[in-house]
Length: 372
Image (cartoon, rainbow, N blue to C red):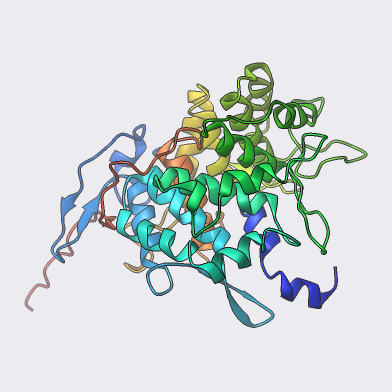
């Protein structure tokens, strides 16, 4: 694809692909070493709330990074573009953590703006993107908004219109078809939540894409099927949600077999654990009943969280990997890490009952200065 074409479809691939114990814990507390459990936030001196829950602290930090309080941006060729995909990741993270509901509502309203919506989904006629439509449909369902009238678009109908005879949800675009296993899995998860359910042909298509080792590839139709952590985590959730338990189990088996010794998971072709892949894998393992592997993943995420010894401005954020905090990738890493920190999968995710506040990590008050 040419550079000009990329500029005209800035960040669409980013948007889809992003969707992309006690030892060494941040100074937050040993309470983070226990299995994640709801904790009532406590009032802070600033009038907000503080929390010991890693997922809520991460979501609070993430909400404070929103541009103008309602969206994220990414830079491409030196120009900042609205990043709808990362904004949706944040909306899902807020629901998983049960916090930052006011920020989630603002972000959802921003996503429904016509120019933002068409820039992400396409115009629905000559341009229509399967992965983006599936991801936004899921976000609308999680938020409890009407998906059939989201910003004037019937998201379920739009997504179903992209189903091909093979069972694959494919892009309709002059730029080519960039649909993949991420979008296929999200489409099944989202459509299963609609009255019509997920199309059987689409479930069959994803199930047939499974590699012989039980994992799932990102791209369909590879000469050699090469499994990917992120694709497998999403596919396992999609197949479990649509009744293909044996296929989902094989995917979870692959994840547990490819977990690093530090409890985390690496991206395809890499060896070092990263928060994005670990967050997605843990969000599949814990709801799938793989508690030992899931808690190892959860613990590795906690170790990447910026604790009380960090600069107050970054406390609660999750670093991409063990190399340290990097503001360039922290928002995306934190958003996907929250899914694992909360232990919630996508199939039953809901924002219902989420608290409006954006809590900060609970840290001891600094000791008062002593007089000489």
